[in-house]
Amino acid sequence: MIEPILGCYLNLEIAGDPCRIYCEEAGSGIPLLCLHTAGSDARQWRHLLNDAEVTARFRVIAFDMPWHGKSNPPPGWRDRDYRLTTATYRATILAVCRALDLRRPVVMGCSMGGRIVLHLAYRDAATFRAVIGLESKDTTAGWYDLSWLHHSEIHGGEAAAAHVSGNMAPTSPAARRWETMWHYMQGGPGVFKGDLHYFFEEADYSRETPHIDTSRCPVYLLTGEYDFSVTGADTQATAARIPGAKATVMQGLGHFPMSENPERFRTYLLPVLRAIAGD
Picture 1 (cartoon, rainbow, N blue to C red):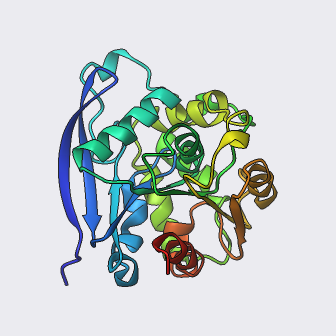
Picture 2: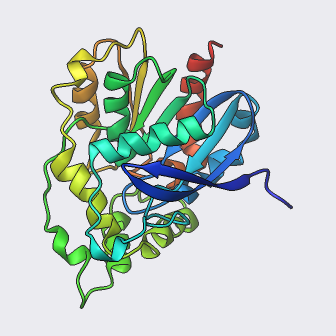
């Protein structure tokens, strides 16, 4: 069986750097741009890309951020430390939208992707039809030392996978949990650490979220009940600061709903997509 997913590479300039971005898509209709979690890549979205009910109405698109998955780091990467920032993250997303000629796409991100969509709803409401934040909170303080994620005596990928293993629901299928961890085991040196710089230290949008206009860009937030890094209460508190935002705590799911248990996740996502499509 050949899956109905098409892959391509985009050659873009982002923040002054030439970047080769790997992208996959399936389906047709309303563009749905999917953003992966910190330290992983777009393989997390493969189940959604293969969901015929979704792709019948939506053009589902997922890409690997620079430094992640099959996207290269920019030239000269060896002489710099990777640290994701709001400016670079936003520039990357907008560059992909322009390259693919996406007209008012929906953007859905998880974890760090669930953070940046809040900034996009505030800053770029005219660009996006709606945002969906998975495991989304407008600010998070760091709670552990990131240095061990890039250390000469520690396998950073295995350490990252060990950390994320506890942030999935214990009831999620074992095969899906291990697949989610495998993506982390393959991460490039220092990449998870650089993403968490954004997540823990750089991206505080708590002053922006009260000013998001959901009449222009609707905001939907979905968080798994087993997520300890962004709890259901965290997401509900963020939603309470956004007039008109809709928040749901997903039972039986953790921090990686689209990859750890896609079958259960779709039961929460489909009503949101129907609302966005106007059904």
